[in-house]
Length: 146
Image (cartoon, rainbow, N blue to C red):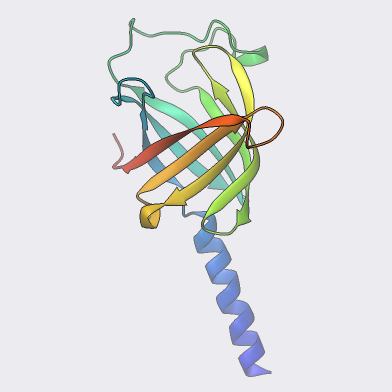
């Protein structure tokens, strides 16, 4: 009985640690230029991941707003904008699904998947409409807080 209790406690600790595996700051990389575009902070609350842009790197204009974003996000500054939400662990500590991603450049919202790579140093962010095979991926790099 003691062994079972210890195993259950340990699995609970692992589940909590794994939920935080993608939490932190990430550099987003431009698909075309390969340059850093922004810093996104991902956090976990109640087992669900969300993330917002905390800093833009060399924006094309000062203090851009999300003119094409849907609903209450329209007209909001891009810095501080929540761009991913609702992701839950599908493979604890490695992959999160069921969430949505917002592309502030065109205002489109996509279904998404997040997957850790390289021992947590990189995060594959995949956005898609319909099935995951019909989408595109970006690889974000873990970084220190700005």
